[in-house]
Image (cartoon, rainbow over all chains, first blue to last red; front, side, top):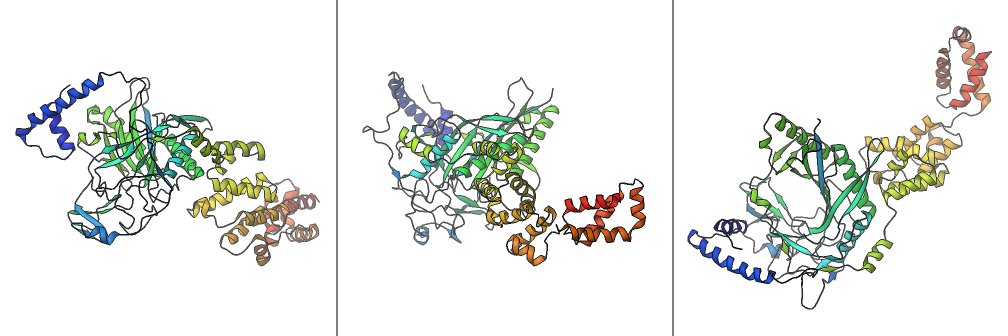
Length: 95
Length: 478
C-alpha cells in the first residue's frame, strides 16, 4: 500500500500543516514506507484477539464524581493573547 | 407512488454528574465564562484525562433501559477536527467499542399502536466549549466551561417515517433519561439536543440523499425542521433538480422556519478516529452491570402497564400520567389519598394539565401539592362542592389562597345539597314564571334548561346539579 501525493496534501490540510510543494513527494515516499511495515505486521493472523492497549493488562482507573477544581481563571488567562469579559478571543469563526 | 420520509436521530444527553467526564471541574450551568475550565479542560500540555465513574454508570443505566448490549470492553477514541472551542484539536469520544450497543425503544403512535425503533448504539464523549459571536468585531469569544462535560450520544436506526414519529421518539427518550436520573433534560440549557438525519425515497427503492439538521433544541423545532426539509427534498427532486441535493449538514432557523447549509468543505467530516492513548479500555463486569440494574427505577412502560392493571386506567390516561417520574408519583399519592384513581386521573389530565399548559409550566413546577389536590377531590366526593365549583377552588389554590377547605369557607362556595333549600328556590321560580311552566307542560322540553339556569342563578351556582335536576323535574311535572 502506498500514499499518493494527493493524500499527503489532504492529510496535511486536515492537520493544518503547511507542507511545501517540493517536499510532498518525499513525504509520500516516507509515509508509504511506514505502511510497508504495517503491511508486514498485518500478515500475522490476529483473529479473535482484542487490541492490546497495555502490556500489563491494566485497565482504566475511574474517578469518583467529585468537584476538585476551583476557579483559577485569572492565572490561566494571563498567558492568553487576548481576553475580554472572561472569554478567550480568537479570530472570528462562523459556521 | 407517494414519497416516504426516512429519519434517523442522534440525541446528545448531557449527563447529570457533578464534575466533568475527564476532570474535576464543576458542570454547574450558568457560571461566569471560563471559571469552570481547569488546565485539562483548556488542553494544557502535560494534563491527562481521568474518567468519571458516574458517567460510566449512567451509560450502563441507559443501556439496560434500552434493552441493549453493554460494551464490556469499551474504548475511547479521538475524533479529530479543528475548532476554537475544542482546544485539544480532538474530541474524546468512542468509535469502534461504545459503551452501549444495539437496543430498542418502543414509541406509541397517535392511533395507539406501538412502534419499535432500533437503537444503533450510545457512546460516551466530552462536550466542546461555546463560541460567542455577538459583540465582537472580526473576533469570537470562547467559553470553555462546557468543555469536557459528559455526554451520551444516542444513535437510532433509520426506522422513523414521519416528523410525528420523530417527536414521539425524542419525547420518549427525554422521559426515559429523566426517569433514570442521568440527564436533567433541560432543552433550553442544551442538556438534551438533537440532530436529525432526513431523506426521502419511494418505498421499495434505495434511501435518498441524507441531510443532517444539527442542534434542534425543542420538540416543535424538530417537527418544523423535518417538515421543511422533506418539502425541500421533494420539491428539488420533482423539479428534476435532484442532483442539487447533496449530503450535508444544515442548521434550522426557527425565525424563518427553514434550514440552511452549514458546512461546505466535504473533507470536514474526515475525523480520522483512533484509540486515545491517554485512556485505557474500560472493563465492565457482570457484577458492575447487576449493581446498576438493581438500582434501576420502574420505567415508563412498566409503570403505564401497572397503572392500567392496578388502577383500572385507560391506556390514554395512564400514558399521560407516566410522562415523568414526578407525575407518576404524584398520581399515586393522590389516587391513594382520595381513594378514587379515575377521578384523580380525570383531574390531573384535565384541569391540572390544561392549567400547566396555559402557564407553560412543567409538571414539576405545579404549585399544588398532592396532599392539597386530595383535599380538593375529597370535597367533590362528599358533595360539598360540584365539579364546576371545584375548578374555581383549584384556581384559588393555584393563586396560593390556601387549601381547599379554607378556600371553600372563605368564598362561601359550599354546595347546597339540602333538598328543602333547593325546593324553596324552585318553588319561587315556578311561581314567578307561569308562562314557561305552561310551555314546558305542553311538551316544550327545551324550556327545562331555562329553569335550571334560573335556579342555579338564584342559588349563586351552589345548588348540587343532580339534586336540582331531580327536584325540578318532579315539580314541573306538577
